[in-house]
Length: 217
Image 1: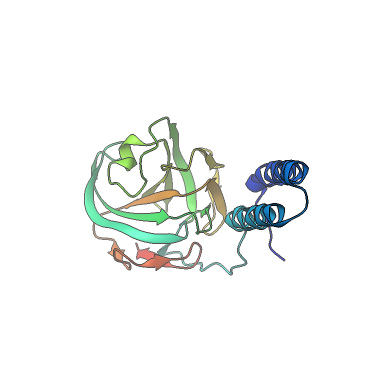
Image 2: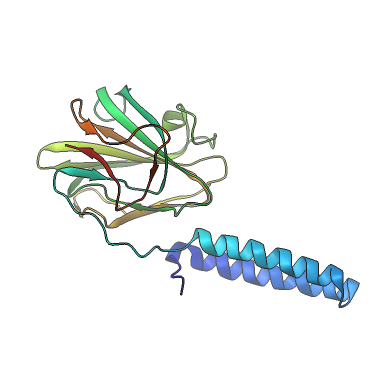
């Protein structure tokens, strides 16, 4: 049985009611026949797609004090040295994970530590795999202090994603592999690591949240 994330309950209930109204309207105007069955099959497929989007996967998390675990499912689209201008204001190693509408969209803490910094920024809704979306799009920024090593990760809204949900709060304890947020309908998560960190992934790699080791601190 598929477990549904709490962020999807309202959307699924609303979608079900809307689809029933559409099916009832088609039956009223067209009667029982191929138009009704075609519409119902199409609506059922669409509903199953939305249902799948909000699924909660059954996974045993990989826990490693020295490892940075993938905070999201998706494809690695950026691995590079870059300037991080919001918090560190110096050069960092950036690893970016793009989540398509077919991926699980739960976000998990990649490391243990204390949440030292949190900000939500209003912004645009550009395509999330563009590099500038990290600075231009609506986003949240979280910094976790892991035994004196600070790791920054950022939820970024995309062209379709219009809502970022983040449960992290400054001062709270972050536990590797536990949920810190959710992005609805396709987006990106960036991770900024200290220079010298060993990166275990490359552009084009598929990763699984809570399981793929992104880097070794």
